[in-house]
Length: 456
Ligand code: TYD
Ligand code: MG
Image 1 (tube, helix red, strand yellow):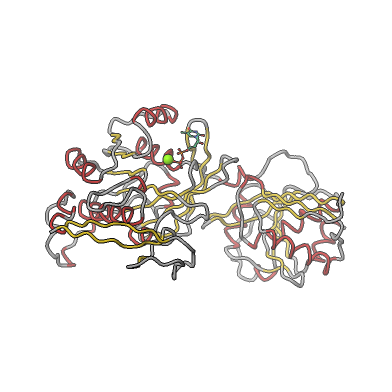
Image 2 (cartoon, rainbow, N blue to C red):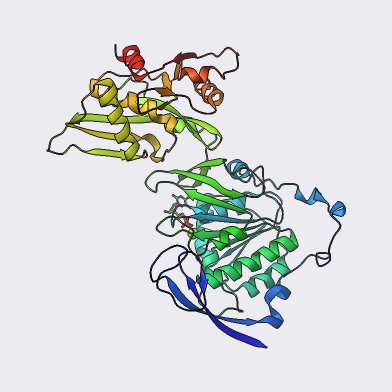
């Protein structure tokens, strides 16, 4: 018999309650509870709509389970393969989140068009077939095996899946799907949850990997429930500054790989281009030595990356000096300025200070501290720093130069890119393997030492 019941859901975090409450006990947001009517026809819960592979309805002995089927699928997209932990696992459910306009649909369409010898079904609830074709023309790749479906009702999607038998399904986006067993509108918590659950049942039972595209709210969390993150195997976050072309694909959760991997793309007129050597784009290769520029070493995931920090220190035109920072934590900048004042005797009290990380990316790796300090001093003293020197160390409150992790990788990267000197903490030297490097390693213990080395 059909049961109808209504539940109140917090639209922010997905907490449910039998009655309306003003403040969510879980996420402490006010007025987020909305009533959703759930009409569940238990007799025909949609599993029967979902195409299942034979033999999945009985328990199996663990020693008889064949992991051959776990062979990863090559997506023909090296950055995506890397973030997924070495390729796509059959039967996995992957959520791709990101702000509107960041390029989720483009990434997914490029995947659908690039993948070799697999039949792909791209389900779009957001764009028409023509719009998708236009985008595909822009990207300029033709795949004989890519099918487009504009549909939002899960039952119909499964009907098409049964007819088509695709090897990969992409849903753009989960917020547009609706299932008939729930009455609330598309995008509501209960719809998102139920549709994702149906997709999960489908992917597990049929071994077909499914990508779900999900929107992100203004505060950067995935729209709708956290629950979605628990259901899926992998959560990928696509992010970047919309005014710059660079896009980072991070793995936030991965049941089949490491979460510290990172994929880097550049959005171009003809789609996303994979960037396999990130340092090259983050350093402006003018060849000139300019004051206020220092190159720091940072890790993005497991990949070392050299990045340009630019600083401008000038006399404040108005009473209160300005502090502005793009891509670097402003509080950390203030701390470094205070350390410079106290330990180095530099006066920034009446100076405007601007800091910029090249390429429009955000860095929260403390190993960039030393490069920031050097860029600030270089600008303040108007003495350029040799662009063949780079810096990898954290700066402590008493002006000591502190060690950073994965130093060998950082040194190798700097060496590979033709840097001649790298400045680091002597405590890092201790753990270094004794292989000779083709780059001079300069140890500095305190800020004072480096001032005299660089600025005389
Ligand atoms: P889109 O994939 O629609 O973003 P999302 O699905 O995350 O909302 O990307 C849209 C943006 O990408 C849009 O601003 C236009 C830009 N774009 C390019 O710069 N080059 C391209 O080849 C394509 C297809 C899009
Ligand atoms: Mg889109």
